[in-house]
Length: 195
Image 1 (cartoon, one colour):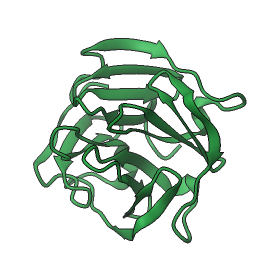
Image 2 (cartoon, helix red, strand yellow):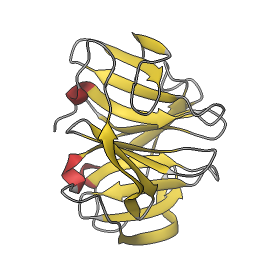
Image 3 (cartoon, one colour):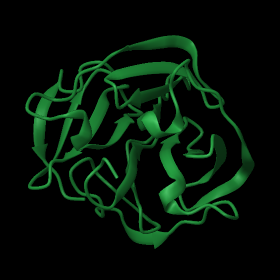
Image 4 (tube, one colour):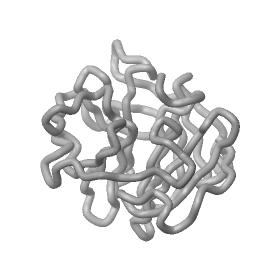
């Protein structure tokens, strides 16, 4: 895996709770700097035939429904611990030249439910849950100063103010920064985080 550690994705709910999904199949909730502040890890279930290793991104809408995207080009909708509670897997489309393997993270802006996707080539697009480039074609973004895209383990958009948070694991330190969708440290540089 490009990303370091056990995090599959991190996102932020409408009420600004941060959810942390792991590649070992658990989800916890807390703050941007403490992954278990509110809830210790519990198992999450996926569609039949899919494993946490198939998950390329997870995002929370303003309904607090959780959207899961998979490496086979399908997506489903459920709760934080049940990926199919609302909608069974169906296909999603991507911008030209992009594949599911290119996805770093996905988050949903709670103000308008637009879906933001960040890619490994340093671009991001805006769309909806089944067409990731429907609204805006890929545009450049930059990680926090001193961090690389490969350090990113999750990106989330806050419910209260649409600030974008990015979590990093460079192998020695775990941190979180905040900014815009294209400048991930515009508000603050990386701070220590526990996840």
